Image (tube, one colour):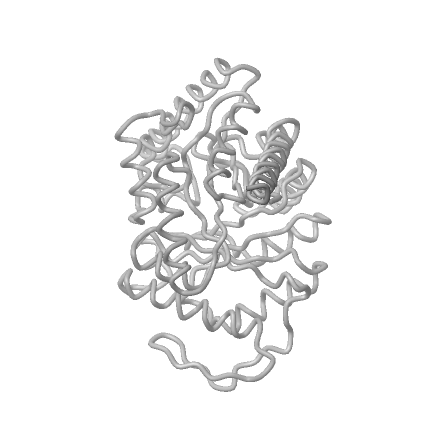
Length: 381
């Protein structure tokens, strides 16, 4: 099936290896960054969330109005805005931007400290149950043609109804992430797309197996997205040299941040993550810097449990092939984010993005041919 390629935009330039430059919200940069994704063939961009970050809905509106086809995925942390309100915000934005371009990603919160910055002192197990109820109410608000009541432990509504529904039959896709038992229970029961970090192939295969089984037990199916940080070069050797430079720059920036010489509005999240998915990346990093030939975890080990940090390294063709091995496991969406955010997006549009799409197409053709051949043999037998 066709793959979806996602990027990620921010409101100012910077990454683990590049100090933040300019104002916290740079409107011109948001427009340029969004257009670069569209011009490079990306389908959608994620807008992240933290207790110190700019509002994702406003950033999404800016990105959508700066582009013609690019879709957005708005990260949202349940617990602060009612799901009925979020549903109306999503569908209103959907209508105002042409329809079919808006999705939501639920993050339950991998940092206790960041939750508390916004006043949430609830236990993590309670937060997952709250997220499950949030998704239930959100989906009903998006789809129900009649007023409905809902009574849960965290949300209670009477006569809830939204006059504005999604602008297209595609609706508002619901994304979710997390690998704890509580997370899998919620995601398997309510998500359309389950987002995974770029763990080694064997671990991702097992994650997919567990989540699929949990969804099937509920009579559901889910799709999967994989997040990585590709590092490419004209040759494999040059790609690894680039990885070494990124590692050195990241180490230097960490030293500067710890000494107070560099300002980053995302600094509070550094090393605060306690999510199971982030811990799993650290465990893989401790087993070795490189897995599956070219999945590099050098930045993962250096930065600690901070989320999406694993990098397939090589030429565009090599990196595309490495990612397509996850496609063989069942991943149909790839979120790729660079250490040079804007520059990498522009570079990937030349070879990496086309190679990913062509590789998926060729795999689909080969699969269809095998299935047709097997069916023909069965008829002959």
